[in-house]
Image (cartoon, rainbow, N blue to C red; front, side, top):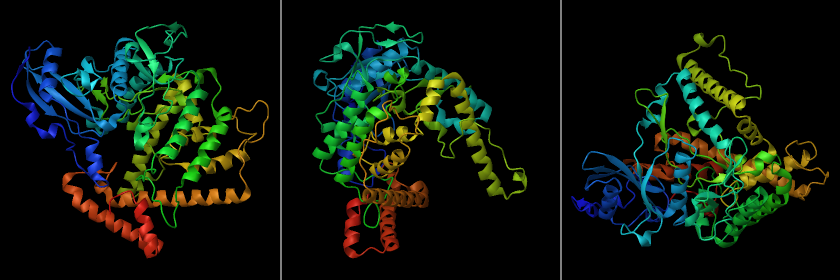
Length: 542
């Protein structure tokens, strides 16, 4: 049995959230990220999983929002990574079980550079560790974030080619079921042992050890949805899947006490005010429209396994040759979904400029750029490089992976935007969703993305008076988004991204957030009662 060097349970920071402070509802935010378990047993299991006698050191990585991660150093110097999910990470058992099966499939079936799993448990009550955990390979290399800004555009494009090769594999692996991937033995009621997926030759491939089961995406658990007893899959058709999503949101409206105040938009008096009735109206319209706005092409009737968070901390590269990817991490909550419900572009592109046209015309610098003042020239050059990179990326996938490219273009249509907004209407988005309904009504018989072979009338009734209200709600919502964006820019590095700031920023951030709310109240000329109402919608503690 592996020997224990010291009592790792005497380090309280291992079990608590220590990365920073939350500026809203901090006690609850910390509580849902507190995990009690036996670190001595986890260290022992780490050593045993690698055939070592003992673990000589345990270090904690900076806290993520959903997991605690540790680096275990064994007596021979080898290191492995351990991950323990926070209570907020997802459904017990399913989230961990799906992640392990997904890593196995990606590594051993698709041959992608993902961590090897050495030991794991999705049943906290059946392990001496007392928590779910995954012990896995420490990926070689460094996060792309350490190298991206130093790469010349040509080297960034070399990385694009590698990402594109991986994504071609994902689009050529088509699952007839929608949900998340598991080992069949981890599901109480697995689907029939039919073929698991179609390969790039469209041949069915049977793998009896795997099965598609309940979806474990964040939208199925965030903002109170974890408590819902709802249809979580798997599903055999895209229509059944999207109806289940809509029903989940309707159920959330009915059963969860209040919808969240999010830090993307300021709501309240003289701005947009979300209501249960408005959200329900949007969801009912979505359910009526689904048969018309879901893509009907054969390739869109399948599910695709996809990494939806390809930011530069999740991609590892060779530090000596940073155009070579050594691994991709963080596959928790991965889902098998229709392609239009995935994030199809890598997050590290971080592009927010004008949408490139379908011709993918290369941007050009203005002829007088060298005569411009330094700061203006710097900003124009930065924008030019960003546009050039996004055009290069789009050209690559248009040529090599047209299904991905065409699906990306579909996302910019009215039906594509309705489907995107419709996944989280309990949380946000109903004002813009309803405005898009008006746009779709006016374009009903002219929009190619609408499936309406029988020429049916628009299935959503919107009166003229409701149309006026919808447009006013959109205007107010846009104003709330603009105000929140302005506030975030004014805060700069002090802005509480996802409600979180550094420990040394906490008091100042709280003070400046109070000042920001006061300035907003003055700008809107709110009465004392309206100021009290604003408190209910302000997403930060007063």
